[in-house]
Image (cartoon, rainbow, N blue to C red; front, side, top):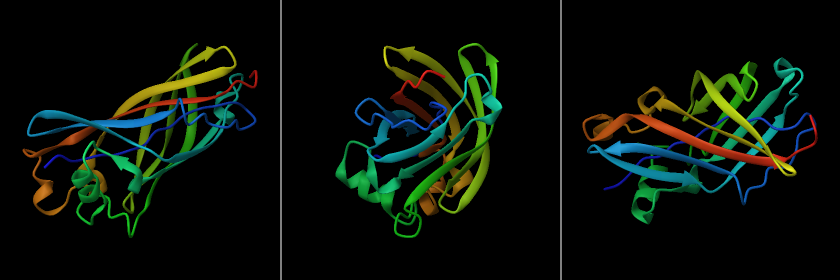
Length: 181
């Protein structure tokens, strides 16, 4: 049975929190099951982002992902992912990221540190973000790897990393209106 999924992201936007264009934005993941890559995404998430290019350290981001909105490509896998061994969406329906620090190591790249909470477990992560202005929008893209077992995702027989790898690559693109910061 196919499965897994995860989330997260961090992202940046404009200094006066801009609306996320959900038609262009995406939070996805790739993991390996029996050494075969499996990709999926989350259909619903929200972002409250405040970004200041002149003062990145003043920037903030809070992202929430509806874990029940997982799309692995099959209904059976989506239902399994919502169960207690995986995301346990009845008890923990939302994964959350809250930034704690933002720094700018290069002119178009940022690193966002923060607390990622999934299934009642919180870990500190640092996520690289690429920033690109296009017409009247800003695109924030990036990826990072998390270890699913750090968040108790895939318990019981699913904790065997020979079946489902521990590493999950989270990929995202967040598109928001450019407010000129």
